[in-house]
Image (cartoon, rainbow, N blue to C red; front, side, top):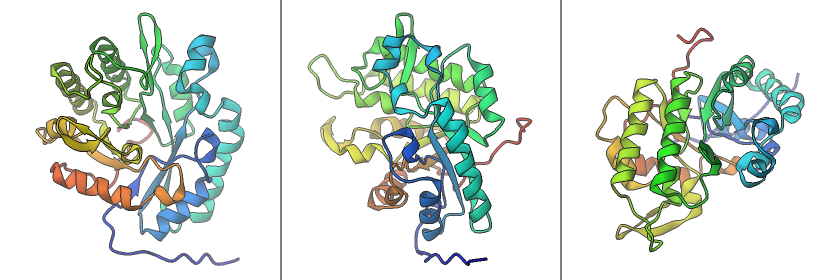
Amino acid sequence: MSRIFIYIKRGMNLKANYHTHTKLCGHAIGMSEDYIVEAIKNNFVEIGISDHGPIPKSFMTEKEYEINMLKYQMDEEIYRLIYLPDLDKSIKKYSSLINIRKGLEIEYLSRKDEYYHSLLENLDYLSLGVHYFETPFGIYNTYESMSKWHLEYYVESIEKALKTNMFIVLNHPDLFLLTYTSEAGKYIFDEYCESATRRIIAAAIENNVYLEVNGGGPRRGKNKINGEEQFYYPRNEFWNIVSEYEEVKVIIGCDSHDPKELYDEVIKEIELFAKKHKLNISDSIAFKDKNGK
């Protein structure tokens, strides 16, 4: 048997990451092994691979499929025939060096809970990424312009999803702020944003779900928002409110689409962001067993 030699880096704070993509989603590079090896190099104790999960095309109209993130996710066949076997192979090879969790980042569509439960039969966790959400007029893309009207349904989708007890992390909960602006096109954080933030926090606390400080947002750069240079997300205004709640669980998610992004200068900046906002960051996720305990 050949030995695996991996150079271990020291002096870092982050111990685990549960927001990790692979090339199977179509907009990342590397497979699970590439990220696992990088995690071991950085002395992580646990890593979760959580590529964009398959939502059946039949769950939405052809038009909705074309305008939403669905086309950037794995399809069901790739998930079954490539993704799961790849994870099992990596777990067999590296489980003596690091704890590896099988997961998916996935959207939530109501009245499809049976499908999500079927996914969990082969996984350790699902994380919720609200890149699109249901409205009375069809599915809306979160990356399109968000108004107070859209924000109501964005939050409602989160509340419904977390109540199902199928999700353990809410990824980039402040993603709505990426496109929420005033009529003049200026970035704002108004009373509707504050209300949405507090509802999201309440849903996370009530359903024992971690809120994620996202490492992907800073890769979009910064802008002058409310008189100061800051990330599009994570946003100061959102996390200032989170810091008011001692009981909320928070975790850093790298949102890595390249193995080099697992613990680079951007993620170190996110660690500083969390410290600045005095967030009580969990080192790792306390997973529930298959019976939900």
